[in-house]
Amino acid sequence: MAGDIVVASESAKFGQPEVNLGLIPGYGGTARTTRRVGIGMASYLCLTGEIIDAKERCASGLVERVVPAQELMNEAKRIATLIASKAPRHRRL
Image (cartoon, rainbow, N blue to C red; front, side, top):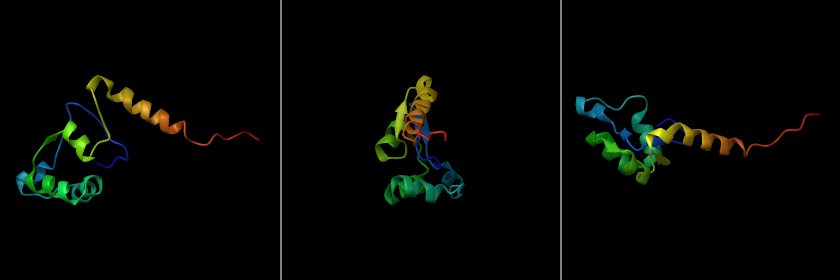
């Protein structure tokens, strides 16, 4: 949840399972989840401890892309290359 753009494989699972042990989500989980998906869905995930699959997460805005596992790294590289191509081109003086 700390990434700017999240690409997940179809088999990825997301949730805040710490609550099943009586703990609050770690590593800023409550704040990061709220920023990514809004207070309603964040409350749901942080209070229920439910684990939800990648396709549901894409629909809620937690991830931007869901791809087959074998395409995960290639898709991440494709997006990185696309972003890098938008950068200004500097001329040598």
